[in-house]
Image (cartoon, rainbow, N blue to C red; front, side, top):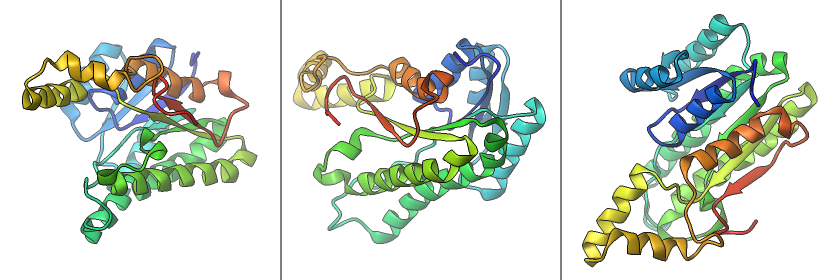
Length: 253
């Protein structure tokens, strides 16, 4: 699906980011791994077999430019940018959140994403490539403590939609994927915590949560990664400006 493509994964963490990188390589791509922790990136590169490792703080403008330069120098081109970097916003109601914290969250999650995309735009125009930005199902609800989170992700969606209109005439597609719950280590630990508080088995927490979805289960990292890479691939060559939900039917959009 991605044979001959160069895919940059900006924000390679132990969950979804790693899965996107591994699956991109499995679909035939050359992969560039970018995140803060060099040791973890090297572990992922070893699993792939061959990948360019670029330790980088995506909040640093100079470092972002170095990432784009390193990818282009190594492979001569960039075909896909998957932006998965994320900084957790403060989880407080909008009536109580500290406004400086809200501003910092916006910078970390929206401005940094836009900066990364802009750094790669010349390469992506040259290859008539594609961009996929990882968003969130927080777009689909308005639960009380998630206000700052929703603001950041809604702004990120607006940015990607506008970029689709701006870059489309140059042949660059821009899409988003919005996962709901992702059944991986972080969520398992959270469910274990909730189960301990309620003195019930962790499976009960899972079952109660899964009962809110049409498929009665929670998405796994590989399912979200496949959706992102579908949007990145030529299979989605007629799709741009869209946000694909991956939530096993928890929300309909």
